[in-house]
Image (cartoon, rainbow, N blue to C red; front, side, top):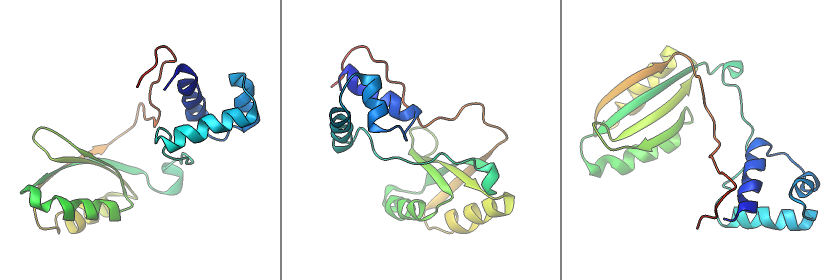
Length: 155
């Protein structure tokens, strides 16, 4: 990625609905040239997709929790990951080093919903040794953006 690619990515992270014309004007390129650069970033996998950012509180999904999961052995991993991909309440799943194997970010309607996910879905799966749950009381910072300074090129 060169500095222009980084600038494009930063602009799109701030406003994914920008038009080719607006983007081109900021970059000093023609609209087709700006569109071509964005398409190349998409093809390279730098830009993975586009989405609307939703306020979970206003949709009724006001409870967020982090759930640490420990598996009995690696042979249970595939069944666990299949379950994770099938549960829409799980927003994030991170494979971690340390005491736990995975950290999940779960967003749901309330404590009963969270109890169902943990007790029935997760703990109902063979190979789950332990879960530790932390309920999120408030969020100070949450962003899908990646910090990309325009400076030096990266490979």
